[in-house]
Image (cartoon, rainbow, N blue to C red; front, side):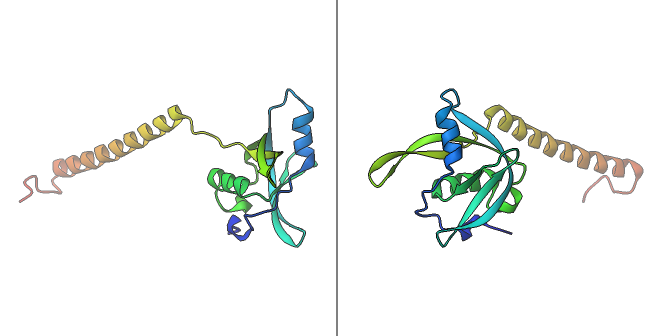
Length: 153
């Protein structure tokens, strides 16, 4: 398993200028949804950096900041080799660098849809109830067939 834990989650503030420029130049574009083709390890100033390569794009996005690495780890898991085909949304944010506000690109956290989560929980409950019902039905069938004594003592 290739884990994001192997990367320095500190100081590298370098971002892909092309992504930042594309969002900043197009004033109507508040965010950019891209599909990850793969995550590759690059060396930048003698430091290993994880970089995202996107489908249908010549640009890549260096994940030098702890914030973006952590967000991807939460959303997609720590094994970056499994990130291919997943969609992420980039947006322009602001951060402090050397006591100055600077523009940066962040990865938008996807919020879980409450309705979907509730439906998923309900489906799990129904599956549990179905399993219990099938178990009881099997016991009843065994008792009817005479394989089991109807009086349990």
